[in-house]
Image (cartoon, rainbow, N blue to C red; front, side, top):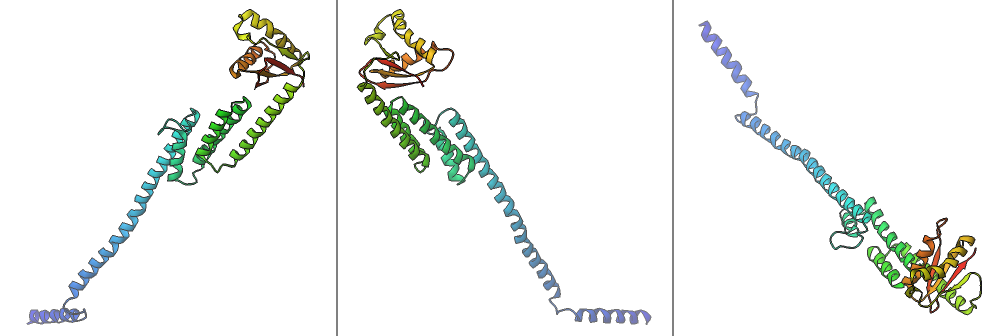
Length: 257
């Protein structure tokens, strides 16, 4: 009897506890909540994974851009500015800017290419080599036509041309009679070495005495530059400065400051 009473009491307590739950599907509801919780956690985990993937991809992109800039700097140092096709500084810097607009090093690289071409253009203009000067200007415009330095250099080259023409006209109008003016033979470079040096030696001595610069008026630009090299090589105390002008005459003038 006692055992039966205990059994009935226990059964009554169990049924009472079950009645407090939300009906016969209480286990199913709890199981569904667990599943919903799992589903809610999955997007959270996915959200945590995406930033890591994006960061890795960004690092790869940054490294590729850095490699392009480095290759551009190497090409720039080797004067591979626009040539050869597919392996030049301008190409590498432009591609780097395409991947990373505003990249500081690539922007500096483009500016350096333009500046180098413009420096070559000015030097060519000073040698009266206008064909090369125009070619270098065109290359600078090809790299960056909006660079304001291009306009400045174009004006500078125009001034050099005007000055050269003025000097040429002035020299041709003046009589050739001065201790600083030297008339050389028309066939100078057809003579032997001793005769060439004999004609040039007075010029060398005058330059050494006055520390002056030279203005060389010669029909052939190559021969004019060769005359300068000979005189400069025999004036070891200082570097002789000179300008060459294409002229029908064979004259060298020592300009004393």
